[in-house]
Length: 67
Image (cartoon, rainbow, N blue to C red; front, side, top):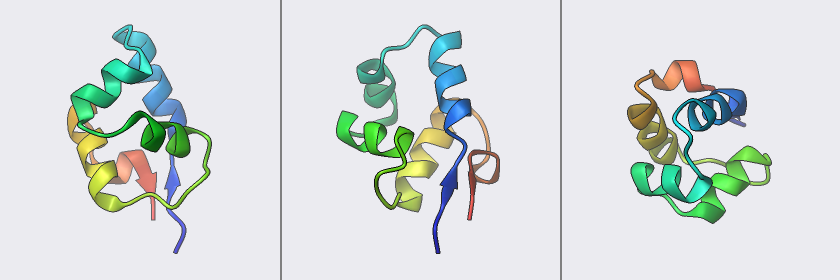
């Protein structure tokens, strides 16, 4: 099953808080390659990674991704 990530929410969050990709990744404790793959829809995304991102953004996993 393919997970569809609402990447626009990630981009909006980074813009709102003026975060670089590296800064956002540090907050989420994920690698920059992982974030790039998510934003460019290049790889399957693990739910655990999405959970970390959703936690940092203060939103639910269901708001961030469609599974």
